[in-house]
Image 1 (cartoon, rainbow, N blue to C red):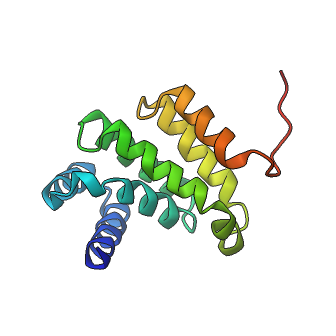
Image 2: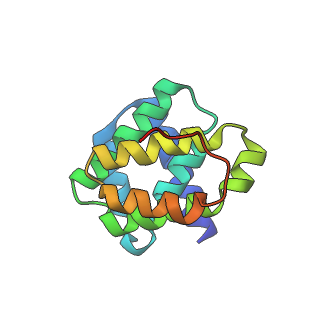
Length: 138
């Protein structure tokens, strides 16, 4: 799994350098590990924490394309985001503001039909319950 995680990281970095979404999708498909695709979601977002907004948008579009092409299942997307939210405290220590970036990614995943809105709400409720968050207006 560590070799695979490194391969995923390199593949995602190559995508940011090349902007070649077709090649990235093909490489992910060739990995042949659909049961481990949640790690692609997790690594893509964690890697993006240090990226510019433009690069974050590119990564988000890759995740959307992977969902649209049915390379990554909705369930694997959900698992990836659940793991990200479970690790949010640590991510915030490493990158202050990580929660805001993660929220942009998960909301975009919902807009891109990679995650149902009710799943997004369930994840946020489960992991942000009791955590500091911006006030919402109803």
